[in-house]
Length: 299
Length: 299
Image (cartoon, rainbow over all chains, first blue to last red; front, side, top):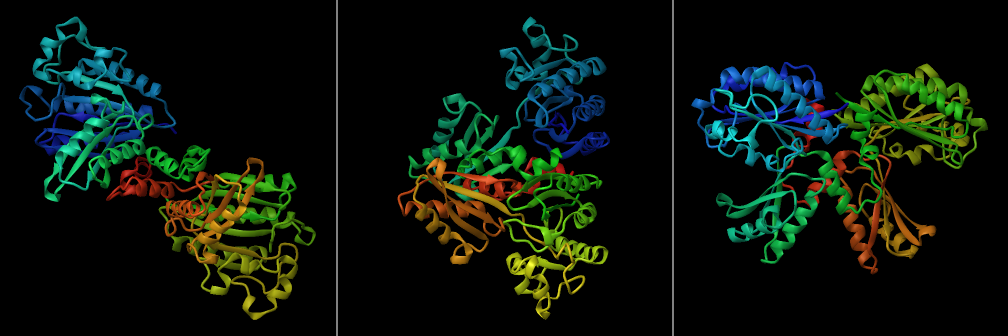
């Protein structure tokens, strides 16, 4: 059975009753499995993670809009996190038995419905967008809700679906398809923040490193160590093990070793299998046929 | 849902119609999923791999006996592989949501039924046996079908269930519970068979190595290399990565490197996750909560 993951970001992180009503709406959809949700009051934002086949995931997203639109008024919304809409971002992620193209098609289908049912303008992003200027979430969201009406007046910001002006209370939504994102941190055996920052700069795309790595150096003051904190945005093309080995080698340059790494939240088993395959030098390995759990899912 | 794997070994590897009738009998049980089966004509033996909850797995095993008992006469059976019974060995393996104790209980339940319904004496083995002299399959099977009547005459070989004499055509069965077995080979960058044999001796339990490793050295003549061929019988207590690193270190002693390794057949994802966790130095990793597919199975 096809499994698509969906991780909507909703602009409400303080009113527990609103957050719970959205969680309940997801749970109420047959076939949609709510895996996790959490709220950040200072961001005033909640992130829901659920999965299911295309039809279930679509129904759950529409159910979220039905709860969020009447409950959230962005004109009165304050929070540290940038946001454009009440339902701010909706990514679809291929997990099992489904392609990226399937997720792109789903993003367009859901986008069409969100625009027509709720009158919310929708921008496609990442893999669902063909426009290089509108692939990155940051580019689409720049100016936020407060600057949205002015931004949309320009021809190049005509939305992919829906009206050419913001929804009065719900702004706009960014809907698209992307690979699973892995939040991955490596802690170093040192308190030298400059080392973490230099390593982060060496490995991240923006300063010449790996194509699918975002990275920054941080201090973990209470532990007296530093951390290279990363988002890996395509573990197939930039695998965890290659990033780990690069950080290790860069650290050696400064006489520093790796203390430990950590995976924050969820990781697809394929990303871990690839690391096992690499380090154990496994030849001719076919995870779909050889990993017992994969085989069970298919039979 | 609980998942138990069962890998019965049946003493028929030449008559395709008999093998297919057994495969069909497994497939016909609701909830039993036949993952793989293969026959070896020179061994005159077939191995079936299927999985399901306890009730489905039990029903499938009894269906196998119902097909095998009338079709197989061990008095006329020839093959290279040692065997004691028509349905020779039936191991139950805990995979997900089930403990080893559950599998031991299932082995005893199935053993009782096999004895009463088919009149076949049953020996419990591995984790299902409390008798140290009757834990290893090799010990129970020694003497084979041909020596079984004489062997069973001794008090210490009274079966756990069923009659004190062999079934006339079907001999006896060995039923039990064990951890998943991983067939794992490491190929070395050398044609020196002595090196493969020395490494195998260094790492296997029987000559002082790891508790849950069986190993032998072989030549792969067509490729001009040698192989350390292994069975890992408990990947939790003797993990793949530790075996791999030991082989690598032992090989260095002879100036030899690892060319590649290979996993033959199925491997539980937990065994691969453990390797990723080890090499990537992942701290505080909880596969049940963090591996996306595990989380999906539970939700």
